[in-house]
Amino acid sequence: MFDQLVGNDRVKKLLRRMLDEQRLPGAMLFTGEEGVGKKLFALEIAKALNCRSPRGAEGCGSCPSCKRISKFNYPQSSESDDWKGIIWTDHPDVGMVVAPKRVLQVEQMRAIEREANFRPYEGRARVFLIDDADKLNDASANALLKVLEEPPHTSHIVLLTARPAMLLATIRSRCQMINFSPLTSGEIETHLVENRIAGIAEAPTRARVARGSLGRAVEQDFQEFTAQRAAMLKVLEALAAGDDRIQLLHSSEDLNAAPVKDEFEQRLDILETLIRDAWMLSLSAPAESVVNYDLLPQLERISKRLGGRRPEGWISQIEEMREQLIVNINRKAATDALFLTMAASSSSILPPKRRFLIK
Ligand SMILES: [Zn+2]
Image 1 (cartoon, rainbow, N blue to C red):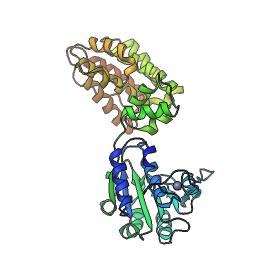
Image 2 (image 1 turned 90 degrees about the vertical axis):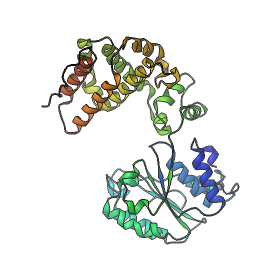
Image 3 (image 1 turned 90 degrees about the horizontal axis):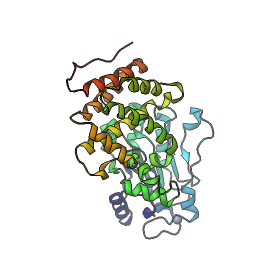
């Protein structure tokens, strides 16, 4: 039942109508950020088409067919060869392909074409998901074109991607595109509480910082997140204090220390949300617009100390450093330079723009 899925009521309505009128397209492209439920919606379609005791045009969710469609038989090993076939669910008419490494393979698309041409073994329709369809390269995309053009009427192919612009126009034009919106923080919060994933104290913040992705909210280690955020709040405090260079260089060292090295990008993300929050408050935006709502008193204090400083400039300086990190500069030196540049650009006389140290 679509009602059991979180959010995207517009998509639910559209899919229900298509199922009701029995005009579900053979090729569909589900787009939208990671973790908004694209795969669950595609599986819900597979259930609707194969349910043994359908409720109207929808799957019941509890008959043997529906239950088996919910369970994928993922390969036990990480050997890429084991991932090159179709990963079937417990239902013989519903499967998915995922890229074994960075690219979806030609042979995977041929397998879909072959299987799509069989009549359903057990249910009324066969459904194939192509996960992260942006990982199609020219060769595998071309191998898929024919079956997308004219899928047999008992087969449906659903491509899933957060990056539709990466797909060839010839693929996009053959699919009915269905766009998923980010979830509201209210929708995420309710799901976290009702499913006992988070307590009432933790759920609101966890929902807000997930930025519309239920997947992100569910997978997040909240304790780790709050530790990371406390460290980044110190950076913001030092910036707001004007020119606390010693604290900033300490923070840069912490950020690059071995145990947290892998969290570097995540921590910069968090720093950006904190800067945005303080900036919003300094512009007298309502408190509800703040992402890190549980830190409201601290953020309000910081926002008052910003005076005429330009937090949006800090965000673009962080973004500029991220771009430079792609070309492999020394990260520690770049972070030192970033924080000092941010501190300098927040004093009243702006120095000439400094390039980050490149080693
Ligand atoms: Zn069912």
